[in-house]
Every structure is written in C-alpha cells, then in structure tokens.
Amino acid sequence: MNTSQNRRRFLADVSGAAAGVAVARLIAQTVRADTGAMPATGQGRSFRGLQPGEEREVEGTRLCWCPPGRFTMGSPPAERGRRPDEAQVEVTLSRGFWTAKSEVTQGQWQSVMGKFPDRIPSPEFGEGDTVPAYWINFDEAEAYCAEMSRRGHRSGALPESWEFRLPTEAQWEYACRAGTTGATAFGDTMTRQQANFAIDSPDRSVRAKGSARKAGSYPANRWGIHDMHGNVWEWCRDFYHPQLPGGTDPDLYGVKGTPNRDGTYSRVRRGGAWIEPESFCRSACRLRYESHRRSDHIGFRVVVVERASS
Image (cartoon, rainbow, N blue to C red):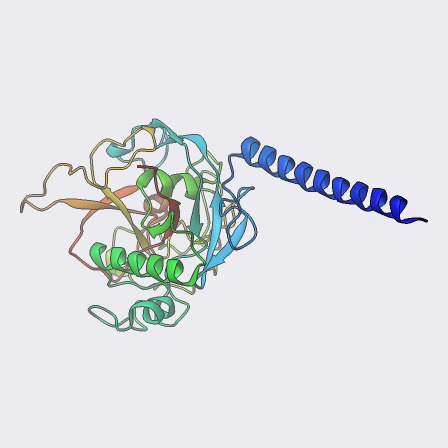
C-alpha cells in the first residue's frame, strides 16, 4: 500500500472514530432526557436511582431508592386502629429520594457524632452497635444529618446538590408503603415475626417488657427498607398539624401547627415502637412529640434528597 493510500485510510479511521464518539454522546444525552437523570457523577452515573429499591451506600449508610410517584396518604375510615388525624389526602412526590435501609444505629451515631447527647443506651431498652439509637431529640437528629452531608460532600461520595436530612411525613409514609395500600406494608395485619411491636394490652407495664432489636432483624418491605413498622419511633421533619398535608411535595418543616398547652410546638413521629401495640405501628399512624424531648423508644432514619433548584 503506497503513502497516499495509507493517508486516506488513516483519515477514514479518524472520521469513523469521531462519528462513533458523536453517536455515543447523542445516545447518552437521549437517555438522560428520557429518564430525567442528571449527568454522570464521579461514581460513573447519575446519583438518582433507576428502579424502586435500588441500593447504594454513602458514608457507611445503606440507602434504598424511592422513585417519584403519587399515593394516597392517611387511612380509610374503616381501618382498624385509625386515629382522627389520618384523613386521606392525595400526594405527588415529584422527585425521587434515597431512604436509609434501617434506622440510625448506636454504632453509627457514635462513629459520626461521638458521645451520646444525654442518657446512654442500656440493655433494658436495647443496647449494641447494631441496635437503633434513641434518647435523641429532634435537633440532635438534624445535627447528625448535617454532619453526614458535610462528610459526604467532603469525600465526594455525595454530590453537592444532594443532602442528608429527616424525611417529610409524605416521604416517610411513601417509603413505608412502598406501593402498598393496606394498613401496613405486609397487609392489613402483621405478626410479631414481621415487626418489633408489643402485645396488645392496656397495661403499659406488660408492653414495656420488650426492647429495641438489632436493625434489619425483621423482613424488609417491597423496596428493601427494614423496620418502618415498630422497633423505635422515627422523627419526621414536619411540624405536627391535625390534618395531613396533601398536594405536590408537601413539606411543613417551617410551618408551625397548633401549639401545645405550654406554648411549644411538636414535630411528627412515625412508625411505632417496640413498646406500642400493632395499631400504633400502621403505615398511617402519626403522633406528635415536642422537639426538645427524648425517649427510650424514639430514634430516627435519614433520607438523602436532591435540593430544590433556587
């Protein structure tokens, strides 16, 4: 082959390679447009998930993807154990988010925050690195989220446009239901082999014989998330209101509800606990609790959300 032929072949190869790159870029742009995915991060792809229950890990926390969607929040009038503040509303969550696979454990708290802020967990209520943390108030749970965000941004594991925080009530119930519509993620009833809750007794001393158990000891819901029912109550970021918020992306973090008798305001806790009967562990059950208070059966779970564009 002479010099002229070599040159023509070289130019053809270069043109073909350039065309291949252009096609690949076009395909990638089309996929991002169709899926709504963000450009790839340092982890090789968008930080958003693709399938419900898809898992990833950030700073030692296992997360499950909860896709955008619509659902009915609250409970129907005939649901057993229903409370007056559970009137149903329609909710649209326009952005997907990551929910921690389990509640924040005592080991995770110590690894991130150091000492416990008040009382130390004990065998009486559940003790161990893999047992959920408790004796944590609302502000302390928020401080944990802020520190996790700082660590994730610093290490590059968490894109700057995403952050750890407590879930809204809507996000919490959506993740708990995982596409189900019954009283619990396991149906209208559940057993003590499916969740850590107390026997149904009016005597609190009887119910208090249990304790928090190792995170993940009970079956996960359809999206791979454990212990949304029972174990420990979980803080939500919303102020408590007697009526559930509906609409698109409801978030009552900065909207105070009805004041308590002492003039303080309560946040919402969800999920029930080891000391509560089954009816208090339903997907729609919600109770109020003052943000400065702590309890031997209230902990929290984190979510990772994409910040809204300003």
